[in-house]
Image (cartoon, rainbow, N blue to C red; front, side, top):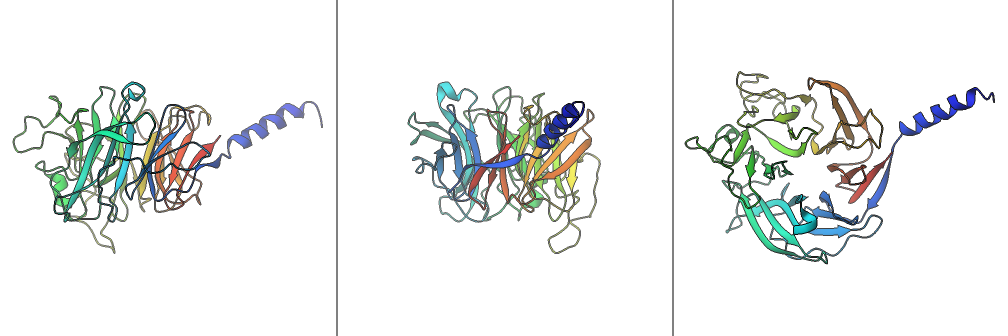
Length: 364
């Protein structure tokens, strides 16, 4: 081979290697995993929808269930759902988690947000306290939402589904259905929440007109992004601002299950936000992260990564400076139902594969 060709071949080989990332199993043997967080020292903190919270070392087996998790209503789409560490976890050992909370008579449920202290030996939760409970409780097995983000100011954001049967409630402010709410770490209502002084409005509400959001994340500017399920089309990626109305069910790019328009069948209306990205047909998005790491090269850096429950792939979306879609691709088409997508402390992407009971990471 010519010496002049050696650098070219080497560069081409490097490019091809970077263009073909692979999935590597990190933990297996889980039962319907829903979310993952990263503990100091390399262990993972994992929720299972049936109500178990576990830890695992990469390459190791899941632990026994952590004690102290409150009773969850593991029916339909409900159960133990998202989990997040406090930004000062190394000092205070605080974790936040959300779940389907049953009513006293166990006939209805709603999404609740709790905080607790994880013991040093990782075996139990103590000082467990529900700091927010969605109102009203509804007899439903659907649309719990339930993603948690800690904002740069220390406040907590929580996405809440409209419970499917109560979709019209997403447009009214006297309930928490189809809303994103903002609370303090003790459950208090921040004085600068947008509807604090609005008569008849629940003061925790930050934005409304949402359907069922299972993706919530921050970008490098501290802005909040959300995705939500549409009905048979009309999945959305939204930039979330306070007080804004995101339209459901008045406007949507989806249609009724089995066909037929929803409401007036309109796509736009004055005073209602348009999605930054929409999917028709639906991909059933779950898990959302905006990748900060440069581990995968410049093409992937600052992209959004979204799991698909319907098609079982990883969706990559990159926006331009004006928040218009610039790049979009589907990765790992045969991976399986993805429930969560996170960026680990190592700068790699971690995917929660629900049906396979595994957590995998994307090798660059």
